[in-house]
Length: 296
Image (cartoon, rainbow, N blue to C red; front, side):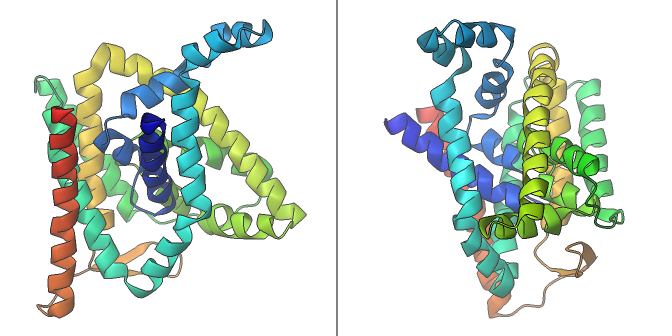
């Protein structure tokens, strides 16, 4: 039971991260040491799992899919997306600089510790690191599309947007902003579905179907890549995380479409010192998580 509670809390952190543009749930999974198990659990929903389920061999199905692990993590993610995310919405409205600073500290520490997991830095590792960084920086600089309520497009948004949970450093929410459908799918659809608005219930349902398809399909690809090219994959992900720091930089001007208009350097005042302090706290949390993982 203790393990399930810890996994639920880690899932909550992933859920919160997935809502925030610029922060990746996959990064949180990588920091908290559940990333590979999460990918492998998703990948295990294969033909064998279907046969076990149809033959009513439920215990073997649960063991094969690590179902309790997956329920704990995804349950925590969904819980935070529909509850604690409201708190973060308030903090973003009134204390954006401080909140971004906290996340910046988390992510900059993650760059170092994820990079440490690469067993041997080769020329290929450096190339993939540069590619990952370039992709993340490019995403921060390109212009967004306009909102699109076409159901096929919403399904595609689900497939692509879920990459924020599966790929550390790539924010699913930020990708949805670039595709023009962040407000429609992550704000309006969730709020209006609670009010039983049928149009938004359809939008949210199609988006979830696309996310599920992307979640289980893409997990097979990532799992295979981890198995055969682990160092290169970690190099690419380290680059993604490093490049995402441009999006997470606390001192920036945000446009109405949720994209960044410009970045600036802070002036020295009490607010800046508080932000720097929160940045250090974020860094320290990752430091303690890493030391806890080594000790346990």
